[in-house]
Structures are given as C-alpha cells and as structure tokens.
Length: 324
Ligand code: GDP
Image (cartoon, rainbow, N blue to C red; front, side, top):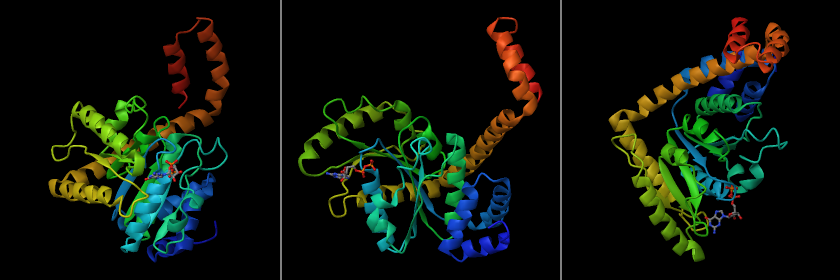
C-alpha cells in the first residue's frame, strides 16, 4: 500500500470505488508514519470534493436502540437513492478488544444494501485521536459520493461533545424508563442536542413515552437555544413501526433548510473546522510531550521534587514544558 501512488487513491475515491475508499480508511487509521503521510497527501487532494452531505450524529445509552434506528433510517434513505455511510466514535473499543458500534452484524439489512457503507469505530488511545480519524473518514466518504453520513456514539465521557462538533445535526435518542426518566441524562448532552427523540414509541411503551415527552418538554424549556432559528424539539419514534423514523428525518431536513437559509449551516461548519484544527494542535502537543526523551528523563526527577514539596507544581510544569 505504501508503494501505491497517492493519486490512485484520490482517483479511486472520486470514482466512488469502495475498495479504494476502504484502503484509504486503512491508511487514515494506521499509526505508521509513512501511512499517515500518505493519508495526509490524499486528504489534501480530496478536500475540494468534500462537504456535500448531511452529517448526522446519533447518541444514546446502550440499549436505547441506536443500531436498530440507524438500520431503519439508513435503509429508508438508501432505498430513496441516498448513499449512506455509517461511522462510529467509540473510544472504549480498544479496551474492550473490538468495536461495539458500527458493527455490521447489528445492521444486517443496511450492510447488504448497495447504497450503504458501514465502518466500525477506529481504535485509538485517546478520544481526540479516534475523533480526528473519524472526521477524516467522514471526508473521504463524502468525496466518494456519500451524501448522508451517520456517526454513532455512546454516551461515554466526552464522546458526545466530539461527535456533536463534527456533525450538522446531533440527535439524542432516549427511552422512557421506569419513573425518573431525566435522572440519568447529563444537562450538557441536552444542550448539545438539535433534537431529542424518545425511541421505542410503540406497543405497551406508548403511555410511558408520552409521559417522558412531557417531562422532557419541561426540561428543555430551561435550556436557552443557541440558535435564533431553532428550538430543540422533543420527538418520538420507533424502529419497529413502518415509517417510524421518517418524522425524525423530516425534522433533520427542516433544520437543514432553515440553517442553510439563515447562514448558520455554513457558519457551524466553519466553526467546527477551526475547532478541529485546535483539537489537532492539542493532540499533537500531547503526543510531542509524551514522546520527548528529555521530558521523559526529567519527569521522575521533578515529580519527586514536587511530591517532597521541594518544587511547586507550577515551576515543575514550566520546566517540563520548556523542553517542547
Ligand atoms: P443500541 O445498543 O442503542 O444500539 O440498541 P439496539 O439497536 O441494539 O436495540 C436494543 C434492543 O431494543 C434490541 O432488542 C432491539 O430489538 C430493541 N429495539 C430497538 N428499537 C426498538 C423500537 O423502536 N421499539 C422496540 N419496541 N424495541 C426496539
């Protein structure tokens, strides 16, 4: 793969060639320097062909129905002729020895669809690293002609914030629980949401779903909307009812249209690109710090001095940073 000319990857992607797309993603995910350099060249060349999609982030605790929802919505869109890519950000996948998200076996119908492309979460040491790779994979998919990108994540740590900062629309899936629906939800996640959908609105669940919707409507009133054109709606949906996820998609399209008209769509993407740059700077600094031999030599010495109160933490940090 190292020998292959970067232009062949670029051409392959632009031709919508799946094999070349998959190979490029392997390059993006690789930790080998030569691969990363090649990936960077390829990314630079495909950049003008990216951006032409709706980027949708989906989060929710395990069991809320994310993969069933993505399968259902994905098949609906792919049947309509959209090209749908499903990606995942799962920083725990490395520890658990395999990704739980974006798993093809969980989305059998969609993964067999000719208009769909499913890729599990890249592995990575840090959430920042995983998110950066996913962003690049998303761009590669766009250049390959995918016009709907679904990025799945579970509510662990900061992963929701990461995904929200790479998508045009962030959907929080919830289910009606027994009683205290709102207890487990972090306020921060509600603030990130462009819509909240209470899932499994079917059969015996319907009554509990209506109650949860009422509670959430009240909770959402306490959150000041960031946008002058959009107030986060509380929707209900079901993946087991025919067309049960369609209304969620209509809301996404409505948001898309409003944001494009108001200019917020482009502004949000521009802000996200800059945020991404700074996230990469931060990530790069951390890596350089970790890999710096002089710093690694000094760490045990200054650590001991700090522990023995012979040096202030601030002075020690200053010394370590001076080697960068
Ligand atoms: P994930 O962990 O969030 O990806 O959740 P899954 O998609 O794996 O779904 C968890 C369980 O909920 C599975 O047993 C699904 O069959 C079930 N489920 C998913 N969506 C719905 C729905 O809309 N209605 C009902 N009744 N069950 C659902």
